[in-house]
Length: 135
Image (cartoon, rainbow, N blue to C red):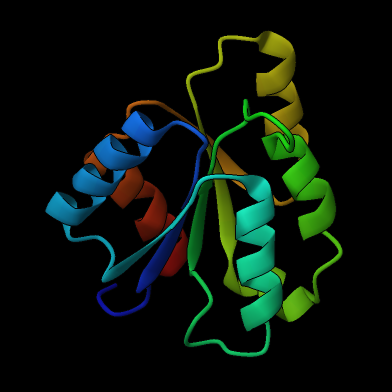
């Protein structure tokens, strides 16, 4: 499993959540690098810029649902237009504190979302999910 997942992209407008989740990921040593984006737009700009450079692309994306300007679902609408090669490389999990049943159902129904994780992030849960997709 080691070496398979090097980069994770965290997409969240909440600075406190970004700090906490970055810390959890750093301590868990599940990734070598964290790409922090404070909006869906920022994340899409990064993916657009690096779509032909596998070394710069994240292996895994943790996406918040509830964000201003562009929410997680709007991000996924744009994400689905990326080349298949990029979508296959960048697995997306929702990381959200939402209790909205509609949001949860919508997230689980999205073909690009492999799992809905609840905030805060639990390293064990993330490790199990990574083991399932990167073993």
